[in-house]
Image: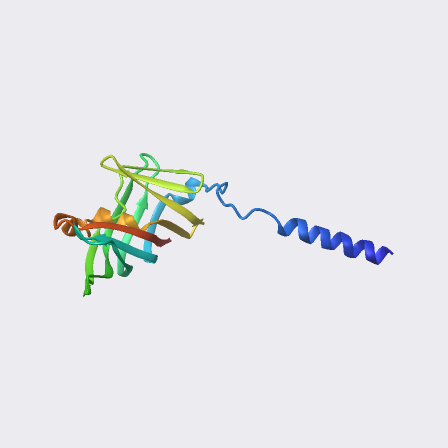
Length: 183
């Protein structure tokens, strides 16, 4: 009988502890861990999609990829004042197809992380440059690694789709950009 009680106790304990919430919205990040100089080591998209509409035609969609390479960028989070300065560059390769035409692009990106101010609230990093704010989800922040995610439509900040919009093409993107910084 004692063995049955022990088995029931262990089964209940296992069941109750395995039913905990997977919601990470209550994750609190220590903002002081962000302070210092970081190296950009990864910049890639996941699940990228591009919807586009030519005037008078139905909406079409295609996949889009954004992949970083040739990383030679440092990103410095300062404490007082809370600014971000980046030095160096990386290559951002994007690829998508519109109306059967492939549109690959390689761009040298400089100053990507420059910001007048930054703050961390919960697991969200908000950076502001010239009055425009961008938010990143912090998925990991330790003394040596910072993993950030943001929506793929942040690429529009580089003006990738301005030319299409000037031609009357309506463009919408979805997906996630994943960024890794290391010390």
